[in-house]
Image (cartoon, rainbow, N blue to C red; front, side, top):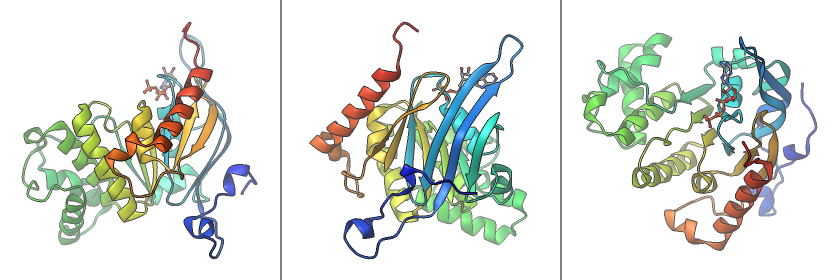
Length: 283
Ligand SMILES: Nc1ncnc2c1ncn2[C@@H]1O[C@H](COP(=O)(O)OP(=O)(O)OP(=O)(O)O)[C@@H](O)[C@H]1O
């Protein structure tokens, strides 16, 4: 089932340039999505009537105050939580069907690598579970490790790598399944700023090279503006969407000095205003 929605009518680069108009296929479609966690105390309303459309090739960041439901929304997309009401489709399927078809890769805040497995064997794990023959597993793992710049580290163990390198391994592991959709929950939140800048640059290059659709949770305005094609600003709990900001005034190819530009500052300002509007400082 599809729903007409103003956010659906996005132009592609081709249409902006005046050639054949086309609209990218929808990957994630949420309508009036709500989720209440039943708890022993009282029910917690985590999401309230969320409407969101994410098109193929989009890089969408979810930003909002702590506890506003960003992770919950990501987990609903991944079929790790069931919405209480509303509708969600992933490439026209239910989240469960999409999960069973391995349409997405999920990167957690902590790298969650097995310390007794080498880097390569960590990346190969989901492929092992899938039952892929060893040679194929190895080839795919090597390809993905090359993508994240970790050639030469295949035989190392996670504890021999820096935090940033470990997170790159977990991105390689998520990419190994060749998913259409990459879901990332604050993957760089625990890293120092210099490493984070470096990984942001790496991630935007990887996104451009692979054309994956990405949904990225962050608390950082600069990170959201730097990486995204669109930024979804959420309200404090229960999470609602306050603003969806288009970042297409920024070039698709991004370098760190872009952060000094007036266009970057204008988008960051709008995100900040959105967050301020939705936030009660009495909390
Ligand atoms: N399994 C659960 N049971 C009960 N309440 C939950 C559960 N998971 C999350 N919550 C609550 O739901 C709300 C939304 O949580 P969620 O983790 O989605 O927020 P978030 O925006 O990702 O937060 P943060 O930025 O701090 O990671 C919070 O109030 C949280 O305490």
